[in-house]
Image (tube, rainbow, N blue to C red; front, side):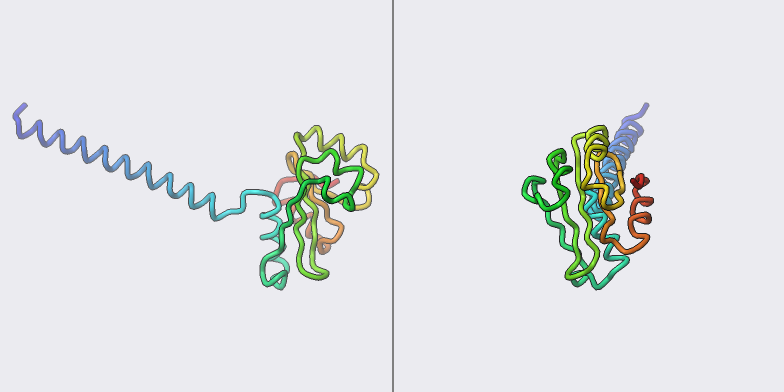
Length: 154
């Protein structure tokens, strides 16, 4: 092989490496942008879905209050001691409100709800190791939101 052909071959190989690196970088950036443009946790998803249904909610954004379950003994007191985290997604005044509880596992969620008398006062959507209530959501919202998550109504 001539020197000229060898140099051309090396240039093509370098060009292919540059193109491959650029393609990998573009895929990585796309994945990051896609991930950052979608809500990652259940309370954020519910907040976005509530806004779609009720645009007047807090000027377009429900408030998400995250706290330790022990900080809110007024909400489902016999259920909260078993939860890992608590979020309240709420609109201003009398708008939709939902309580999101996260447990250590799906089994812990199931046991906690089976033993809870407080949780029986409203319907809940179970999705993975999280659950949210529908007591103050507009009619049909619990079912709609739960279906989007491929959850189960209890």
